Amino acid sequence: MNLFRSGEHIARWVGERKPGATIPVTKLSELAQAWWHDRLSPEWEPHTREQNTAILEAVDLTGEFWRLA
Amino acid sequence: MDEADLGLRRRTYAFFVEHGRAPVAAELGEPDEVLEGWRRLHSEHAVVLNPATDELRMLNPFSVVPTAYRVHAGGRWWYGNCAWDAFGICAALHTDGRIETSCPDCCEPLAVEVRDERPDDESLLFHCLVPAEHWWDDIVFT
Image (cartoon, rainbow over all chains, first blue to last red; front, top):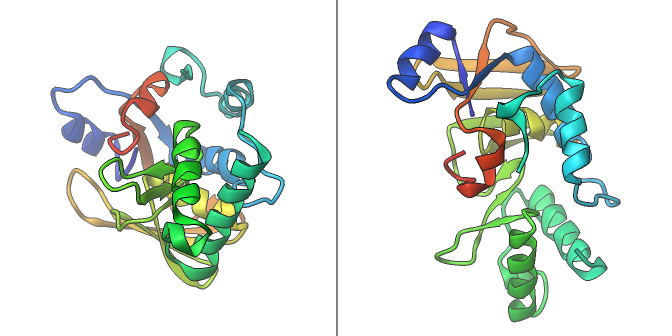
């Protein structure tokens, strides 16, 4: 899960491997905010799979690649 | 996850944020009990242990050990486990921050300021190689 300068840099880095998913850094920032914002709360409880799926869907990360275990 | 394990997790994270380093088991209580609790939390993906040593490896989004993702937030430098976690450190601390890393392809430095939950350089891209259903197969690789 890395940051890159451009799609060209990603393609070179992936090489012969099967590519994963690429999203803009702005969407990553939104995702991180939703996913991690409660991590230090004294009331934190583990997210359910359904909660995490909802977070992904809220930033339009859907489909086979983003399907959680 | 029962209340005792949630409490141990809470104390573990609080220690890390206060001191900027992970506790050893004896700093949180009777060492064997703490280790057993950490193992249960590890199995629930609430902390990540080094399987060889039972030491804390990740307190997601924080990394306990140095990584390629350095984050300055809340007046201190931290390490993120990956780019997602680097942004997650600012989110967890509810603060602005600065992320420093390098492009894995060309190795040129990358720096991103996070202000009001937004990156100042919107041209960068995030690539996730591992499909979500396999993230926890090997979370360190992911």
